Image 1 (cartoon, one colour):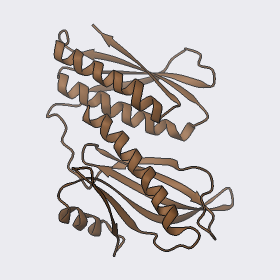
Image 2 (cartoon, rainbow, N blue to C red):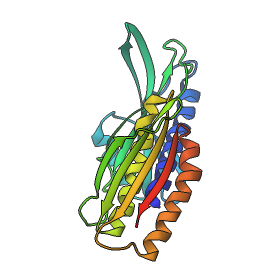
Image 3 (cartoon, one colour):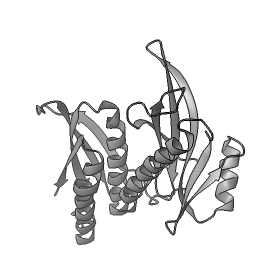
Image 4 (spheres, rainbow, N blue to C red):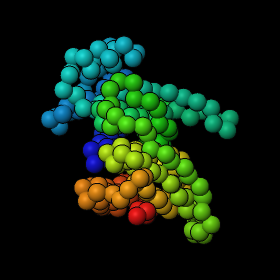
Amino acid sequence: MKYLKASIELKKLIEQTNELCLKKNCPVLKERNFIVLKSDGGEQHEIKMKEFSNEFLQTTLEENKNSKAFVFTDLAATMVKDQKLTYFLYKGYHCEIEKGLVWFQPINEETSEPYGELQFSNLEENVFYSVLAPDFEESTSNAMETDEQIEGGKSIVFIIGNLNEERLLHDIQRLIFDTVNNVQKHQGLRFKIVLNITKFNGEPTADFLKKLDLIKEYTHTSIQSEYSNCEFVFDLEM
């Protein structure tokens, strides 16, 4: 269940970085580029970015070999419906997760005061950590919208299966992570996500069932509380 726990840890690190960035730069912009790095022992520290580049980030990680996650900041602007949107940008990566998280905080350009809430932007490949996945072919996965009527939302079923139990458990967690983040772009909608899970070529083992129950419990308690517009249903095909 490391994957899901890491996802919550990374989201919280981005939220903490946002609070720190606003504190540093409101009402006067002082430091647009810095890193918040978390070690495998849980310690966090700030690193000023002498150069805004991937090379500097790679060097920082090489100098901090016990890091498990980090977030770096930037200041950006774009045009939205003919209006300029200025925002602090946060990109976060974790050694247990194959994709990075990109969030942004809209601000007042003159005072750096927050305008609205911290918002999810997108997922991107994690090019900073070598994330180990089970050495087996990825699970098959298909998604479709169901006919179930959800007031103010949608019902989606993901059909996922594999011969290898370790790989299947990994891919279930990865699917949950990808899904909860992608639907954050639709905060006005509720999503019921049905996971239709199949262990190919035989019955699942007792160990698999135990680990799946732990994933299910963590999803219902921790994941759904962090991503409140998602509800998960686990449907194991026996």
